[in-house]
Image 1: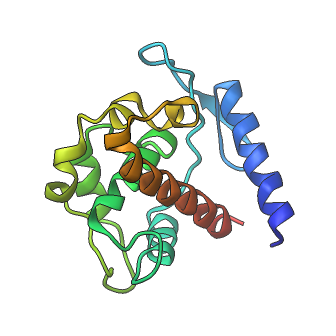
Image 2 (image 1 turned 180 degrees about the vertical axis):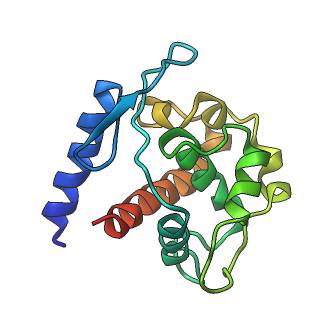
Length: 161
């Protein structure tokens, strides 16, 4: 898949998300409720195996998910876009249960992200990240989490095609 095709798919996902409709690659299956005044987001139907493969592809020494705290980006993304629990502890537990084919370089552990759960960008939610102004204290972790979430989104696009 070319970079232009990946961009087209990403643009399609964003366009579908803005409609408030749930979808499974080109198929409307229901509507998403609007919670707490946030824009509704589409929740693509991703299987556990697809999620495990996508996470495995970005997890490893020298890859974007090579530090424990970068799992925060995964949790925020899958909670906002894939229907995983909004509670980060429950989200971590759910991610631990995925059918990974091989052991992960860094496994998800709530204890490693617990200290960051009250940071502004985490409380705001993934869908607010593009428009957020992040303070200096949070900037480094925010950038790592954003990059991890974007890498996961791209990996998921690769697994569902």
